[in-house]
Image 1: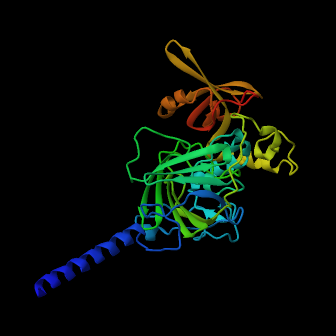
Image 2 (image 1 turned 180 degrees about the vertical axis):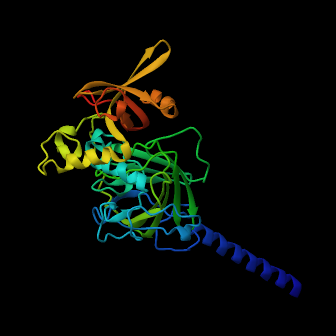
Image 3 (image 1 turned 90 degrees about the vertical axis):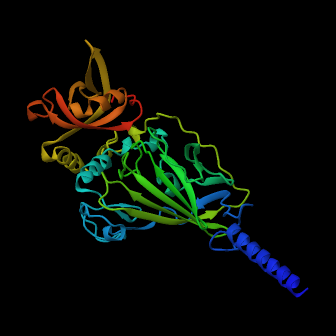
Length: 382
């Protein structure tokens, strides 16, 4: 009888321990009970959400020694993410300093002088992390055990995120990249790669390219608030890894996403001033134009933009850049970018290189690099 009682007590104790473990797993590693959860115990992010604090962000540059590996050199001075006394080589995203490589600073300046090239006025997808951080657009989240889907009101942009920590696909590139999620306790971690390199971070010319890697972290602080954190790495644009962070608030159930009507390919250039590459007179005078000319011709390199055209001639492709102001400019591509040019015909591009005889406007342009600015070409022939 005594042995039977001891066996029964041991079985009860083991059952109780198993139940506690199961409940702990169901609640996540933190065991918090103050946040909503799905039947499988994972945090429930479902609802309509809106960023707190308007355009504000917090963030920081992650020191190289904290990540391991050697430094590539800081662009623009300063070691933190907070805005201080900015130099001409320092650029910020909503108050967070962006650690550009020296060679990327020229690209940033060019885009700042050609802000109308930003994809958002043309109804292109915002990309990651821009879609998450820009106001004034809300977003909705739908979730189950296998997927979390984010629906952004801006151009009704969807992101479908598998939660199985699966591998990224090969030979696939997109505006939003490819997202793969996993759980770390009660935090959803989303790894995002495979970008097409055509999105901007904002309308002032801050940019990334196809080598961007973003790690997002979604953490419920309470029932009605989650914290969003994005860590950005891009070895061809940034000298350091850096982060942005902000809170997002749940909206009342009566709130919903509204229709966002946007005409794809719409040109908004006429609303920009000349110093931003637009058509309206520049009230600031000719200083911006002189600065643009100086930036474009730095280190003997010139920059031209327009609509890339291509024609077959005895099996070879003859390239030209169509500009409304001067017609077609013949292009001679460097062999290293020949195959890339072929894919960009009939798109608006920016080309770096030198004029024939190093005389601007002399005729033929020798292209050494090219970057896509927009799908298709604007109505004015560029």
